[in-house]
Length: 340
Image 1 (cartoon, helix red, strand yellow):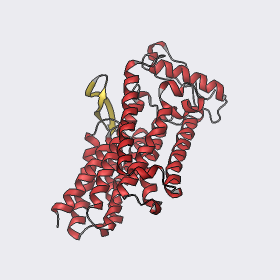
Image 2: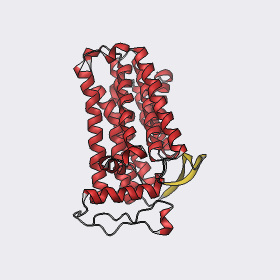
Image 3: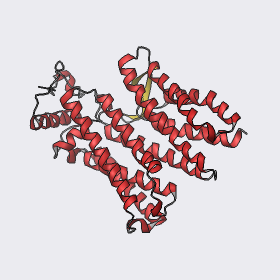
């Protein structure tokens, strides 16, 4: 079989999967894989939908509804406007994200892809899709302000995650496989909570940055909103696989919330992985040379890579992306307001 989900007694409480030696071709059937995935899910997360899980789900849904009301208040006509471009873009981003999650889950289950790699791929797409589509495929007919249009795209991105909550994913095999794409053992039982909260933090930071850049009345500077995405997607995206594969020098970090406590837990990062942040920040800044004055560009070239690297090192486990985006946004504010 491709993947054996039998758990040893001393590992069952921690949800650690015991895998056989890798094989190049998977012989595990879909039905058998789903059945074993459900067994692992029950061992790792419990058989019942707990009160704490219900509370987190209700809070998440309530936040989505409240924010939807806020968006409709800002532009109620968007729900009734027949703008094919605008709605096609929103549908495409969710269809693409579902395809990425399902494909990565299949590779984890059937072809032994490391779940750390799979999770990073899914997170990169979840973070980058609304922003990249917003900049590469603008909805000119919608008449929406740029920040509001991007906010709609980000809000809609959260809806499909409701299909991955415990009682739903256990009813449908495809959803269980899709969930497996982001379910790292060391993230349990906070897999969805951590991922959704950091995506939300990312969006809030990038939306505020976009709002600030629009206020500069310089259309070329709006493109700088892409730079935090480049640092996160390529810098942090490469940091984990490089750290897993070649990282020899490790340091400790904690999670924002772990086992009922703030800033607790012990997790590892590597200096080799963090070096990716420095290199991508340095190289990613070069194409945006025209958006700065000479002194601003030199100042950024020297300090931005260092600032991003330190931010990633100090950021909580699974919450490094929002920290990188927020710090990068604050850095740009300081550069444009203080450096001539």
